Length: 133
Image 1 (cartoon, rainbow, N blue to C red):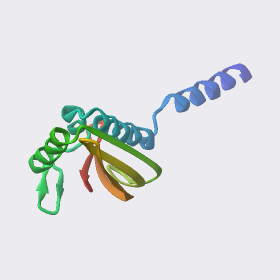
Image 2 (cartoon, rainbow, N blue to C red):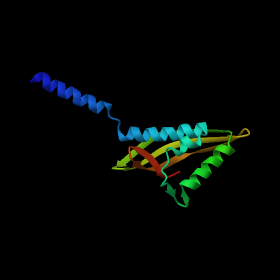
Image 3 (cartoon, one colour):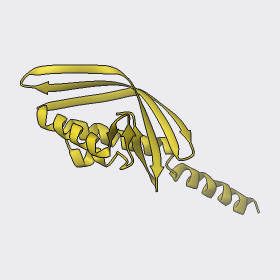
Image 4 (cartoon, rainbow, N blue to C red):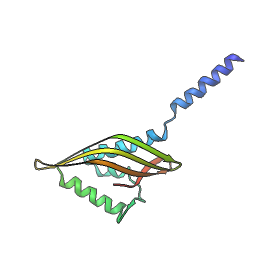
């Protein structure tokens, strides 16, 4: 009896340890966006954005054109973020983080920093940004 109880407890703990938390899933999407900015990879960038993206007057297609323009305009883009906090409510999430972005063209550098608030929705098994860029 003891042996089967111990086995059950160990199996349960193993299953819990193997599960990826929703925060880790969101981290993965946001890290993918960061990588895409630095590589200037539009398809990788768009893979973290929902087709239902809408922020003020900008929908997915306008966002795509804007980001493509940045990638074509700047020689180098550096982006980092930290101090990330999550608020997850079912299939919706809000992420607040500090960021620093540096865009360079012909040795002229533009610097941007501050706090960004990103809104995400879970679409199937993956989180996507729906607002905040």
